[in-house]
Amino acid sequence: MNSLTNAFENQYQPQYQQPNTLALAASNREMEEVKGAIFMARQFPRNVFQAEQRILDACKRPALAQTAVYQYPRGGTKVSGPSIRLAEVIAQNWGNIDFGIKELEQREGESVVMAYAWDLETNTRQTKVFTVKHSYKAKGNIKKLDDPRDIYEKVANDGARRLRSCILAVIPGDIIESAVKQCEETLRGNSKGPLKDRISNALKAFKENYKVTQEMIENRFGYNADAFTEVDYLDLIKIFNSLKDGMSKVEDWFDKNTVKKSSSGLSEAFNHSENAEERSEKPAVKEEENDGNTIFDFEPSELPQ
Image (cartoon, rainbow, N blue to C red; front, side):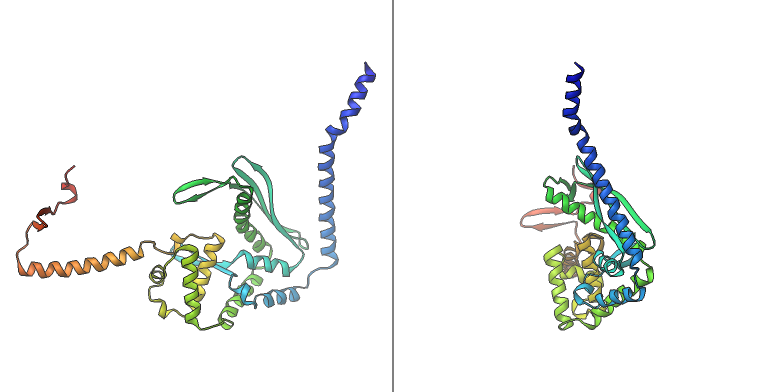
């Protein structure tokens, strides 16, 4: 009996221990990778001046400068800052930084995700653990995500903002401010084509991607697009980047009823002048004829139920 029991245990013991062995091996491998990264960072520390110059040189590229800064409204003012794209470029050129997004757990209808940035030289680390719902809101309705690819993209999009925050927290603020300033100078000095054509392309991009019309943009700025300056063009780029990165929504910037309001305003002005002429010609009456039907001017509280 004992021999059969021992044989049974010996046969199935490796299967029971296999998951624990694999997990232990993965943990040890990850630990060794971390130790190796820290060792290399200490052996080859960054040159701060060279790293800053590399960052500024990268910010001189127009393609990066166009997506480097976002902007969104808050409390009646405009808040702007470096986008996730600029944060990634800064981290890459600053050097000796480990950063990324990890999905810790995927449960029914949600994922637990961690965004982190770790300066291996100074041992400064920022970590944010958050939950991402496998759903999104569209036209007032909640739509659940079932496709693994849609879930992956949702996790990546939500994680990008936390990753940006982590990266900016471990890099000196003056380096970030210098990078943003250089990107703005790049946009001012290396813009290709006339300003009118660039503004026209921006208006077209807003309409195609977010259904924002020219009237809505003009209502936002307070004057016609023909009067837009280089500063206004930069503001348009920042707003577009903010919408693209998910930092804000269309409703935060533009009034979707702009066209309706302007058209109704013209109608009211026209009707007001027309009614004034009629009142000057004949005394005011409480009812008027319209194709043989009588229309009464009811007050809202007097409308029949």
